[in-house]
Image (cartoon, rainbow, N blue to C red):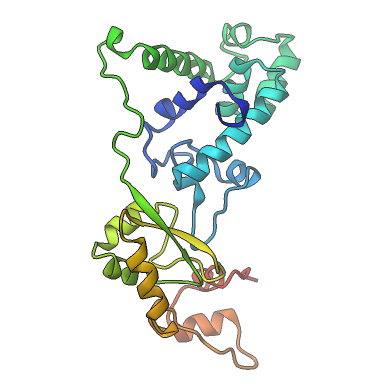
Length: 258
């Protein structure tokens, strides 16, 4: 499997999110793999004003594989403990092991005091999902067809920020379809600092989009307003003048609010 992991771990998102790219939990875990923001950042995913890579199933899956591999090593290949840690955090599981002198998940889950209920129930749910996914018809389900429901797409490398509405126009599609193909994007523009951003476009449209991209004047590409800061101005005074939120203004410019 990816990163040398057991292939059965590919079914973890079945329990986490039902494979929904924009799934959001009450605790603000997001995406197919339900990453919390700190864990996502630690495993190479970006989250800023422009993108939230937890929502990209491809990038999030690579990050999840990396994280699960780390957990597997941390618990000497015991995937039950690794999965419990994926849900409850490795620190909590390690503390429970040390405090109660247990070194396997089933012993830890036998007592309600050792681990939270959600974590105790999580591992059996994952194992059940794996059993059902292996033999779905036996349990009254239709088998999952690899790739079923995936929309075919091409990729276009953008030399700078581009308004998604322009791309939709060139690809003869809707802004909604462009956003559905690129669920990590939080705005109607690609990031202003990326000069090699890979944007997904409907299958068969890459040549047209690339051609239009090459023909377009720079002012056509990104509908961003640029403002020259004058001496003595602060983030607060500029935000007030432009009638935008101070935090949004700072985040869009990769600055910290002071």
